[in-house]
Every structure is written in structure tokens, then in C-alpha cells.
Length: 314
Ligand code: SF4
Ligand code: SF4
Image (cartoon, rainbow, N blue to C red; front, top):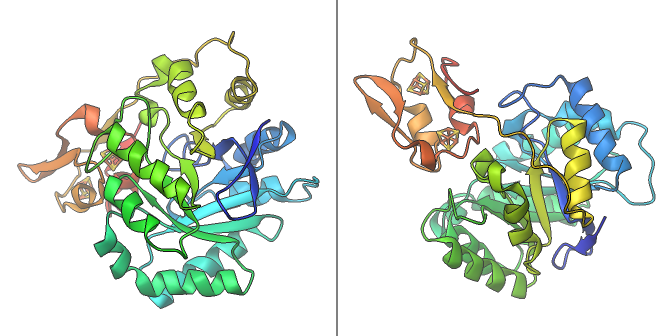
């Protein structure tokens, strides 16, 4: 496994980062024990970097995998919270510490930032993260974003250590610009010393048929230090590790057709429409509906926001 220094954090992380959204309740729904088995296999094969979020509800999966795990190379876990107040972020940091346990190095990001405006709106939460870094509770502070402007804005803040931008070969899901705009923003951020963790390398599954060329596209980019790939089975872990180690004779993963399912009991509250970062949903005749299938990267954020549990990725 190849390891890269994550910007100027001093941390060395595997180029393959274990994306934990896919195995959790928003997607495949593995139990904590099942998920921890998949993660443990990744650790055994040299993956030392895990990407999660408070929203993904996978802390328990990760904590179990970390339990009694011993290695010379520390496991680094990056998580994210939507908190924008001081109190909210204090709760989020506490929840992550308790939920993940102490057998990892913790990185913390603001989830889903769009621009300098949203960053300003989250300043009290950012201050909590910087204090947590000073206290040695978190090792690095950053943001995740689907927006080109999110990367640009975070680059201007010296105290932001890491950025997790949405980037993939076709540019699916990128907001406020195209693939080249995002690459330029990432290059600049990396040049300023930010650690870069690419997310949605396979466009939420849309690019699975071109799995190899999609991963190669990102692996070729020096400015991308690690690539978060969602994994939910031991086979996927072994295939991805082999690919990242240079094997190019592997079969593409099975392409499973995914879609959004909206139940009849949707009350049309619009929470999912507001939660979708990609503008893939709208309200019609008092119900949510998908506007454009191609815009959906199956992140599951709409499902997490629904008070009626009426929308999910299946
Ligand atoms: S529709 Fe739902 S799953 Fe699709 S991109 Fe929007 S929030 Fe994510
Ligand atoms: S959040 Fe749930 S109930 Fe509200 S519009 Fe969306 S699917 Fe319907």
C-alpha cells in the first residue's frame, strides 16, 4: 500500500481511504459487527485511513474494528458534522470521541460546505475544532464539499488543514463548476499545504462500469493524497487494495443498479429537497420526486433528513 503525507498534517495515510458511508444504515445496512469485519480486513491489508461522518451512523462499526487492533501504523479516522454552533460542535466532538474510542487519530471536518458564506456561518463550530486540535483531541481540521467555491474558500483559511472535495473522472455531482474548475481549485489548495481526500471517485456508483479508468484518473493526480472509496464487502476491500497496489488484471466490480425509492407516505415537507446538495429532488403535487437521475450520487443525505423515513437509496 502506498502512503502519502496528508498535506502538512504530518500524518501519513494510505492512498486508499475506506469510505464508511456505504456499509452503514444509509446504504447497505451492515450490522456493526459485520461492518467491523470488513474494516478489519482493510486494516490487515494496509489501509490506515477511514472516512466517516456523524450522519453515516458508523461509529460503532469503526470502534469495533479498532478494538484491540495493534499496528505500528496508527489508524486515522476522519469524521464530519453539520454543527454550526459552539454547543453543537462540542456535542459532535464528544460523540465522535465516545463513539469511535481512543484507538485512532481523529480528524474533524465541517460537513458539506459551499462557500465563504457557509464557512462564516459555521465559524463558532470551527473555533471548537481548532480548540480541540490545540488540546490534542483532533489532529487536523477541515471541510468536505461538493462545491468548487467550497475548496477555494477553505484554501484561504490557514487554519484549515484538510479538504475533502467531490471529484471524479466525469465530474458528476460537482457543484458550481466543472471537473477542470474543481481540479484547478484542488491543485491550488494542495499547493497551499492542504491535505486532499477525494470523495465520490465513482460518482456514487454511476461510474462503476468504468471502475478502473475512474480510479486511475484520480491515482494519477499527485495533488490528491487519498481517495475515499465506499466499501461494504471483504471482496471489494481485497479488489480495491490490489488495484491500488498496481494490479490491473482484476474484474470490474459487479454493477448493481441503485435508485432512490420514495414511499407513498411522503408528506411533502421538502426536507429532502433542501438536504440534497445536488438539486436532484423537487416537490410535485405534495410529494418528493427525483428531477434528474444523473444528478443523484446516492449519498443518502435525503434519507437521513426525512422525518417520515420515506426516502432511501436501494
Ligand atoms: S437525491 Fe438523495 S441520494 Fe441523491 S444526491 Fe440528493 S441527497 Fe444524495
Ligand atoms: S423529507 Fe421525506 S416526507 Fe419530506 S418530502 Fe422528502 S421524502 Fe417526503
